Length: 143
Image (cartoon, rainbow, N blue to C red):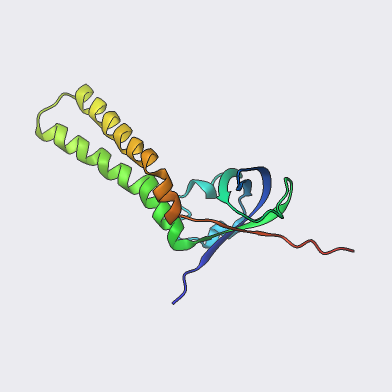
């Protein structure tokens, strides 16, 4: 059973150290994605992403197609939205059941979310290895 692929058209903006900076152009392909309601890329018209590539044939301005397996997109949504929501709700429940004041609960939510995103930042390379984009040059037919 193969997983479906999410495709986005993009333009290479910059190339540094085998890393392509690609501006994604959001299209109607997002309409078929199951994660579109909670994915910020479906709402944005342009989004920059960074893709590791050892292919030296890419140049700034090249039109490319960026591929991501749908399950990898769902994985990213879980880390970006679901887990922080759970951390926030747990912080509120802990504060509520310990009779903390509202300002203290608000600060604890901010602190716990800061800690969560700090941990995600520290492990960004490991997460980046699991969520991988693939890029392919678009072939321009010549007249």
